[in-house]
Length: 114
Image 1 (cartoon, one colour):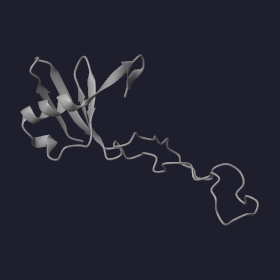
Image 2 (cartoon, rainbow, N blue to C red):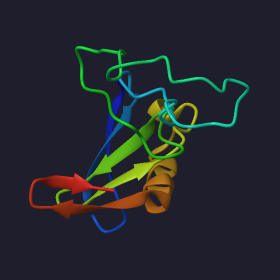
Image 3 (spheres, one colour):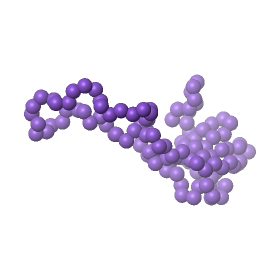
Image 4 (cartoon, one colour):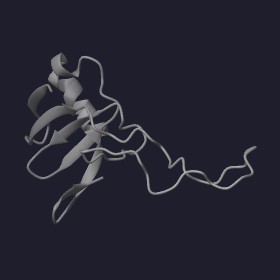
């Protein structure tokens, strides 16, 4: 994970880092649903979902599975997707531009929510 800082035109200090999720849910939908198929007999699968994992997996919104840049100042947090190439060595003016385009994340009592 790369990390950078910059100061914007309003003299606000920003921290920037990339997030590349590794434990995301790969399934887009539950495959155990009724589908018109050739099989007309009784359901052969029994019990609950047999797929098991020892780690909690999350489902990401569209476009976030490849990662994003997080911009954080003292007063707000933003996300930009996709991660721009060479963001970790680009000029600060470019970081400022991307920060302005990044989506603001609302703050809740327990943290941030998109």
